[in-house]
Image (cartoon, rainbow, N blue to C red):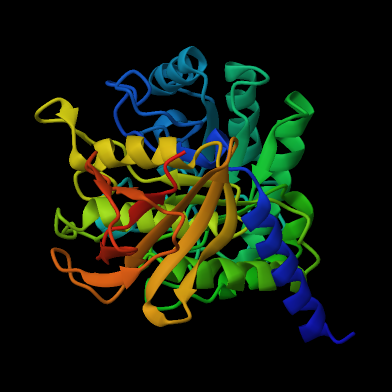
Length: 414
């Protein structure tokens, strides 16, 4: 069998596996950039927290050689421990004092100088001592103790120059050292690959990941990561398919895939408020149609992305209310067919679900209909009612429903 045929077969098997699995609460993860209110305490369920945008970068903690400020990290560890979430800590952002380029601006000048460059004791070919990073990982793992950090993700969005100014070989070496040091202290910690963005919203290819695996990075990671910012929610399926193709090419198909960051978004300006809940629901449905095992929504309390909680008013947003509804619809259900275009109308997408005792459901929406508009679509006869993400329930009459930008949830009434 040729290489292309093997790759296609692997993708088909992965899609079939994803579609047949019962949806677990572990799939739903997120960021929270403030420790109060904690999402669970506010009534928003999730399984795992990621540390990015929480002021606990390497540079935030390791303020000078041998000097560590654990104050903020301890707060996050306390919250995850109290409320039962696992922690994914992203190892990134070199302290200025340890950087190869201590006077260089990174992240458009919004963070400390030099952080997007490798440590000074790592060379472009991956040689060097890498002692500064080894010291930090040793201190980190010894401070929190075994079991507190479940995942260590080595760097954030390395395909973007404002996030990473080093070579791929340097990052492979750093991943190797993080793995060796961390697992010597906690053998159960899992190492997550650097998460690339797919070369931006307009490109869904995974070129950086291919280069990383070609450079030998696959032998040091347990989980493959990517980010999920796309122009259209359904585009994430293509990005994940491209990821699994690269994984197959480099013998990595046995590893889980996490989307460690993503949402509707924006760089600076949010999408329209009436689009936000529907975009998020479509993105969750689309990701569930792939082999991805976990999605870290960005961000619980960020107005520009995710936006489940309004910090100014201290209340749940429409996005948060919608999340709680579709979380309860999805968890414990089995996706019997993945989300895809309907044969009769390519602008209409749908996917089907079952639960015990004969319950059947279908999520359905239109990708061509602007928010506030809808089209009539015929549905299967077993569906007698539908729910929207604003808490309303409507009967289905004459086997037709009005379908628009935001998915609705059809039910057989059981």
